[in-house]
Image 1 (cartoon, rainbow, N blue to C red):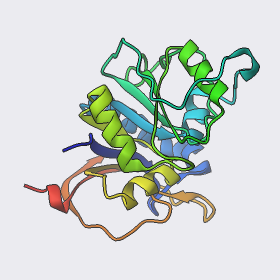
Image 2: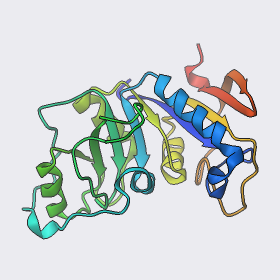
Image 3: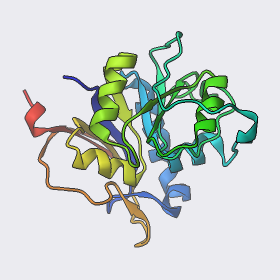
Image 4: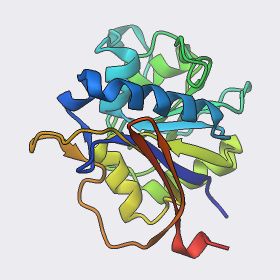
Length: 233
């Protein structure tokens, strides 16, 4: 396989939503706790999120003053040190502001992950200078949009990533699903129906077959595991 094995690990509502106020409700908290517990046990080389999820969870809207950084050429940059445990941000236009080269988080499933930015070539070259100053790896996977297949190939060949967890949101999940690169689904279902405006597991999905491989019930939460049909042995 010329790409990492991808496991999509998400919390959803009963009706398949992944973002919205339902996640803040008391009824969902045991399910979210279980999601993080499972996250810490899944063997992987790190996790992948889109810009919005990374911003909400880690960067919180901070952004550097790019006038302080020298422009760089649009060439992949991989620091000499590679930890083998990565926080991969699909950040098409370079909008995330990181204060260091690694995730700092109380949860051991995320803490210490070496940040990797996946970008399009439609990025301010000064942003590349900023990333370099932080020792943050970056790779290019398209001119104006990100080609998921190209990105995953680079994560495999340049970083040696063998397995990565895809952890949302809805847009990036949909892009991976349409590219037919999701090998497993690990779905933690909270006992709640979400609002109509909340976003689904996949935005703009295509038909694909998966086989149910495991079902667990933990208090009021159901955990479903699926494997893509072509991967079932």
